[in-house]
Amino acid sequence: MKKIFQTGLAFGYENGVCEVCNLNYSWLFNTPSTLLWVDKVVVTKPVWEIITKDYAHEDGVTDKKNNIIVQRTMKMVYEILKSVGMIELVDSNGISEEDKALIYKQVESDIELLSSVDIIKDNNDHLFYIGTESYCIPSLWTLYASLLYSRRTMSNFSLEDNELTYLRTLIPIKQGKEVPVSRKASAINNVLEMYLPELRLWPEYMFVKQETCDTCSKLAVCDDKYLNTIEKRLFKLLEQREHDEIIEFCQILDSICEESFKDDYEVDTNDLVRELNVRRVKVQHKLNQV
Image 1: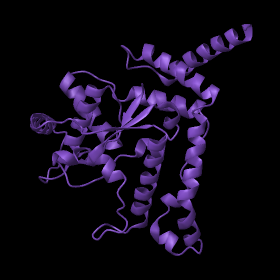
Image 2: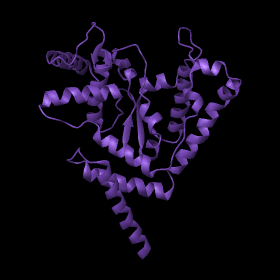
Image 3: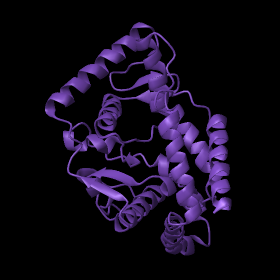
Image 4: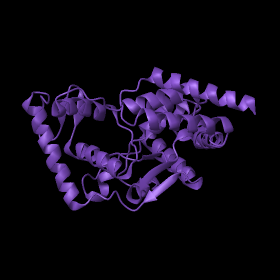
């Protein structure tokens, strides 16, 4: 079963790591076609409470248009995914107090290593920089905890660009050799984008700056309709999961990935596409003989 779990700074909220409740939705915004392939989205109950809580009317919470839109949108999207059986709720991330301390210790050790080879050049006791990417202790703790959870539960999660930069910088230094990071996800995402139906899930209104919308005569119309538009598009997308050609595609891709990525993380997108085409031709040949 293919699982992706919801991470972000809020992943460590139950462990008292950070009060910030940011969540990483990049996988869903950048590649909504993932919903045609993945079986379950794993969400811890503390994170679920954050996703489904209405922040728009609370005192002290930002009233910026884009933040509110994302909060309302994700609340609706995840509730719909739960209603169709795609959300797997788990009680906790399972990170014990011992785990928590060990993760902090490892983060501090790795920061010292990067500093010793002059990778981390700026340190103001709160933020660390690798090139233009910035990091704080809670964000790195969340990354390490997510990697631990991923290994324990045999599930996947989406890495942000700054997390990829960090891992691609750190791991070769620790291993003493080049180590590919996230090549598997890149290859799969490229194939999904090439073969699965083009999906336009998110209205443009979601990404327009507030000051632009404030001067637009259609603001009220857009604000009134965007959730309804997303809901219709999402259900249309989810209906495609039941189409025979989508089911066949996913079964073939599953089989290829199980074989190709078992021992080799260097699988190229072109090789994956070629093998996919070969398998599909073979399946069609068998169907023609029936």
